[in-house]
Length: 230
Image (tube, rainbow, N blue to C red):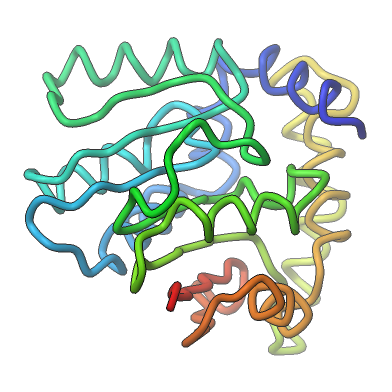
């Protein structure tokens, strides 16, 4: 898919995005996003960028964990951001700010954030290396990058069961929930095409990140990559 096609897909599915994520993950998506917030080690007055923020779920988790931090969420889908702003206003978050933008041309000065997060979004960026270079640029020295993305279990039995669900049931059920012919087929295919963890970690190294770690959750269904700018 081209970037514009991916954007249109998210624009159309925005109203059901949170519901389908929770339904199809059996509620685990809440736990995964919370783990991202818990993985951050921040000073009290930290500045955090949440890229591909969607409906601001991760930004809200970060705000709950770090009430004095200033969090900026960026996404390319205005409809997603509208829903995110509704949550922010409903629950009176004064330290979360959302804006529309492109992950490959971030509208931020160099060395301006203590941390940057992107959750289930990096695989949707066509020019991934360019985006990672942007992430590196806007982080402060010693700033931390947290990326969470879908993976595949390694244990044979669990892997077989999960692959049956992921390859067949998830796209079939997901597409019907959102009345689409291809929304969750795209999700499945984009996860399949994402690089293996070792290869992705090598890409992180190639743009300058150090101290790269990988943590797996829920038997390998999701991977969390943590890296630092020197």
